[in-house]
Image 1 (tube, helix red, strand yellow):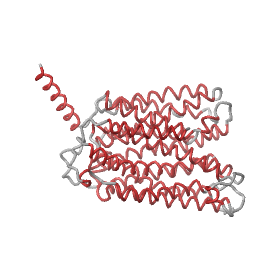
Image 2 (cartoon, rainbow, N blue to C red):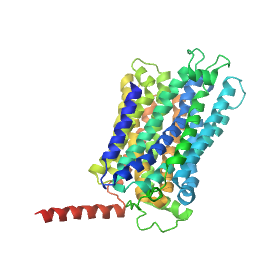
Image 3 (tube, rainbow, N blue to C red):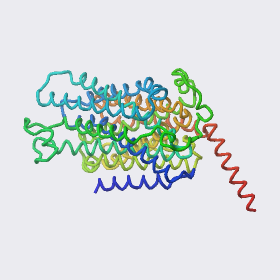
Image 4 (spheres, one colour):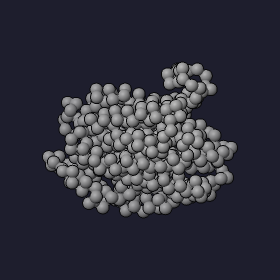
Length: 489
């Protein structure tokens, strides 16, 4: 049933995509653009699976990996991811383009996941004596370096195929892809763990990864499965993706972002980085995204650990269907933010981001009050915080950075903004790993409150901001509407 609901959500997204056509693109263009973003999106979803599977592995490895170990490994990976954007963003903008970027991401992450699987096998089966934190950190950092190409590449391709007035919905689609990746990582990952346990009934997955081996849990399958799946999507990306409409035989599309009128300009690496670090507006967008990283990963990384340690009646549903819940509500968060932005605020990204940060503040306060007394309330608060954070990410990293950075600087701007989310993720990973180990879980939701206040204040500051080309486009559309109204009178 749960898989069927995910399938229905995917079908609904496809319907929304084809019915949302404010610029009246041709049917052929809409179909070709769909063929373009579907493999891009599913590649990114399985990249997410190959990123969050570490969290599922921690539960399967038990005492071999402590909470502090997970916090350090995940933080090193996320900070590697964040810093990589400074190099890989300009590289995609100036040299590689989105298609080659997503292929590099998938190949590199696939090989890194296979290496993590081999390492896990030798630790579990051969009792290899290694420094687990060091070895996992090194390979996971390599994984996250290649993962960093993924988000920038998908947004780079998006920038050429979607007009600013359509990007709120695309931002929602981007949030949906993250949600599918979380579902694959947690629910598919948990299924992989169950099916490959030493005492599990014989099945095809156990036969592939544990046949003829010693009677131990084949935890390494958690890394091998996304590694193999990503190789399939490498082939699909190479076959189907086009960087721009012109490459697919369509006319040039002026998307009315910050690059309009500047497509002939050749930006240097310094110029690209200056668009972020010399722009107060882009830094504020990055600040909001930083808080989003704290929100999202403080829940996705720690809720299952919390529920496993603080076993309480009522939390079983959330533990068993954690990935599914995050998927469904992540889709709701992404689409609510994107649609509110495009339909109610003329594609301004600040207003819905402020509303979502405010909701996180309220949810964290409720969570702090009921942490040890109402397991079902805590489960729903955690899910809704992730929902809000994915909505913020789809607006800030997936959309606002592209709007204000423009097509020529999309990868750099979106990459650096996304990097701030992972700086926030790394901060909460080490911070909460240390705090909950030494001071207890009661400080877990309290940790979010100051970040929610910061995100809310900064989002309010960018409430009215729009790129100049977008304001001009909206004014022209409004004038045409008024002229049409006048002529009818």
